Image (cartoon, rainbow, N blue to C red; front, side):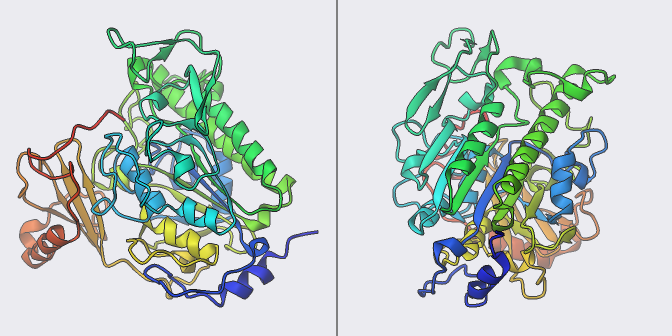
Length: 481
């Protein structure tokens, strides 16, 4: 018998306030059976333009394209950062990088007092799991997944370890799972967490899809939250120009392309096939209509491991790549599918960001978001109520790599500051995203009043966090991601 999603979900959805961010009063919670399953699939370094439904012409992604045609495609969604760890921190804690605990790839762990979406859902009766790449706490620290609200974890804790698609081991909860791969470490660095496999026996991505299937099958009637943090198409940086590690080139083997670009495309299509497997499983288990599926990427496309983001126009129509705070570094795909609730084939221009996911999934579960998050629930946009959707007064990013950078988006205006390690008062670049989404023309001199507003915001939207000051003093070293 089909689960009566619409009647159950809308009965309690009508009783909660749209946009619960900042709400602290107690609300009537729906029974566990009325709560939807939540599956968030995150790609790693996938560009806005790398999917067919976002304009890609060469790489084939039929499953994700179908997911978009059956659901909702956001065109103005932003990652939490232009690099991995802070972006994921924003996703799970609902805080932008001016307030988040983790603002760089420095292996800083989440702390016990940090509240994640997983912990709130776990407390509400969800079975919670993360499979894939974590990056928010090393082994034995306060930041490991099982101490941050996840019942189950399988994957990489360390980001550099996650470079290698053929690792010697992965983690299951707090135990190492040995794999038959044999890894060669960089010369003179026997303790290096990454390296390159010399036999390539087991491909980690394939294990993640299998584990995700098992997690979904094993959840039974208990609502689940699964955070599937894939590593594709991140490069194995330790493998140099051969860093696009994939078991085979698949349908691209015969293309007249550089080998690294064939591998990049093969990785993305392999990921697409994995997403298709999971969507088919939801139908097989008859839970498709009570499962909302999100798909996004942690930042823009990379130029590592031999990959060339210009070859596939991976940034789409935007300027910049990973480690840039221009649109290409932070504007990412966001596809959301929920049959019978989200209308098929829709597109939303709503401006949203990773820190919106926490309040969004709280509202989906009938819970109130913590009052101190930066995010705004985009449930109204999901349901087609664009007029009733609360808007951000601004979006903010800071990056503590590549010389130190900041960016703001306020309506149509985008402000970018660069080289802050050398000059904490670096001039502001200003772009009109409405007329110039490629950020090709700096309008700063033409709009002094907008610049003054941006200057005030840059001074007030962030809090100090040890190790994350701009300028040459008080900064911590960050690792390669």
